[in-house]
Image (cartoon, rainbow, N blue to C red; front, side, top):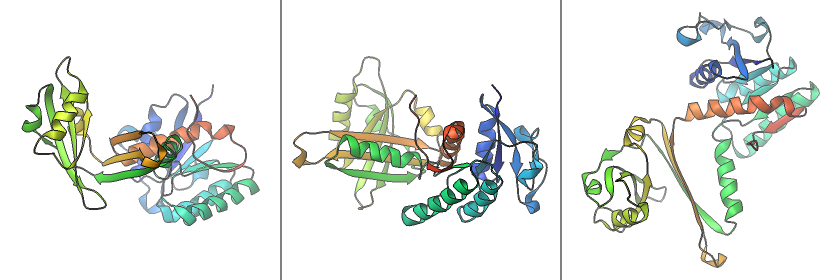
Length: 286
């Protein structure tokens, strides 16, 4: 099967992440990068073999374009590509009425020129709202608790490491939107140790007692220490009126741009199966 030729429009952090991710893609290849004329120069490093041009028409053949320009420029760039009947994937960071209007305009343009666009194919909008929707569906009578913490500072905790069953530990703290102090603790466990009693012992420790504390087991603390970027905790708890106790929790530490690039590539894989028009990003069934 022929690989899809994918152009990257813009070479900021997101554009570079998309271009690098395309190098190892089995189903797609990097057709080239489109940059502003004032920024045009030969590519370097791992992107050196690929062309850089100032207009998409200068690339030999393009199946799909990934629009990686600032949010304020996305609509204009996307309009020009769709008018040239080039399918596009974009992840403009819009929400609410602005996102709905943006989606509607791209839908009109794509239908008029009989081509396709995937809108909001990033982290947020994109995957994060899908997580939230799934939590709401599974626990319909409940409340959401969430917190984002860019670059949460973690430190080795000798106090936690002395708890029975704990091999090593990292701890960090942040203030929630309401101002309450909350703790995140990452532990590696001794062989044969169970997480539940370790969690109970940590939460009962004088360092954490009386304050919201979440404990996560990991394989290697070095992986957590090496991570940079954003941290996120989302929790949904059932209300007393629901009659049954249920809770869901996701905790993530990630680099936002790398995640957005992966979502854009996922959207590019499926765009050929979509009818003409604009479509909000959705996860595929495996």
